[in-house]
Length: 194
Image 1 (tube, rainbow, N blue to C red):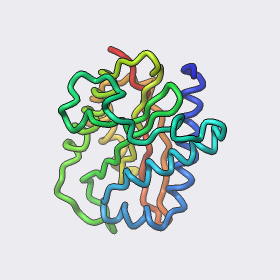
Image 2 (image 1 turned 30 degrees about the vertical axis):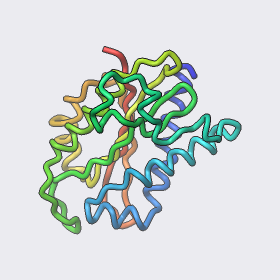
Image 3 (image 1 turned 180 degrees about the horizontal axis):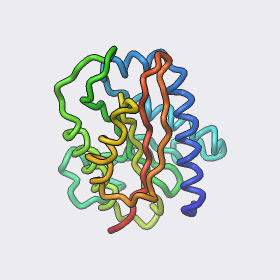
Image 4 (image 1 turned 135 degrees about the horizontal axis):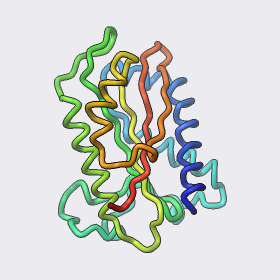
């Protein structure tokens, strides 16, 4: 898959996820509790890929939780390096859900600072950067940031998004609201060699 096709695939994933997230009563509950939902996200993205590429919808072509034995990362002892969330074709995708600590009425307060979530995101970007396999041409990380009210978007992007080691032009996003009107964003960034 060339980069143009990879970007188009990521855009389709973002569009489909936005629709699913906006219409899910369950996601509204998770956002209100600031609870993570990476497992659900993984299932939905594999489903989107299967719908996009029905001839490639097999356990050999679309692989959730691609094992470390296959990824070629030097430091396999670190838990963070054991698996890649999704491998499809010649591409890999890491997933994260980032529950912010921004206060918002109707949302449960949590004490875990967003900076810790962003550090975990950076580790996944680093893992993708260190992935050197001839058959992997494309790498990206997709992350849902929630809740992220209109008032906090600029703060998040200035304080956290700008510090990620990805190029600004390689970042795509979709904004969505849960069925009860809580604003959130899905970001996706192509990860390049440095």
